[in-house]
Image (cartoon, rainbow, N blue to C red; front, top):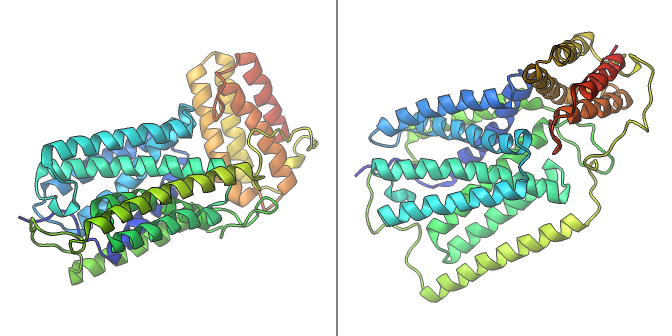
Length: 409
């Protein structure tokens, strides 16, 4: 019987991390830079995922291109689902993390009850492959939620936060080499590659100008980062297609990832995984209690920065300012006409465009950017975007939009 999943070698983990990095940066580029919007982007990639998965399921054996294309698409899709819960529905990240953990447990439980195995070396039938891809989708959503929650708890920058999932994956690998359950080790590492790849992508794309005391990014931008990693994925897949070094032609029932070990050593390794979880929890609790070097959330900077009308955007490219003004004016027009849905959508697009332009605008004028950003936050607050409060009355929305338009000339 032919297996539908590649052999788990170093190449598997390399390309998996590349896919998760693309999942973060490419989704951000489509959503923010192109102004498509979070929900529309999710619909687009859900449709692409359905098509890619249908092609993958029809194949009788593992083929690198369709398999890794499906992984790339599912990484983007899973990320978007979590982002919608967080940014659109204001679901706290700890709730998302708990919910996706429970959902993953249900998927594994049903998979085990039906097939009596969770090993990827036994993905040789349509039901098992269906369970596999469902588990993969949930692990990406869970990895996104837990990764973002970690950043929220600790205030770490993406560059610094790369070290935690990287260290955990290394520790799990050592415990697996010692005697840890290979299936458990695989899925734990699989989940952790999501925050690792996402943090790498954020670090590469984030601007070099950072808050005081915070490590800077490499300012490559989401589009360049996506192109680099898509190119690396393509090159790796071509290599694997030619060499077939990741192909497992048959499934042997006695196959295990390492030789059968001493049951006592397996118990010790399981205890080691438990201690690793406790140590990680203690580290996060300690980091949460430390002063965060990043900007404090919900901080209102308007009182600290007062600028004359149009002064804040003098150093910004006119085309970018014009695009912001167009969206703000569209939202204001809809507010005045009573089109609440249209006004909210325009404000959402305004937020997405402003966030996408941060990397290019903030270095040009930190003071001007801070001033506009503070007023932008007030506008978004009146619509309940990125805030826990419900939308405010149209009069307040109109007032804050007028203030923003005055600031951007």
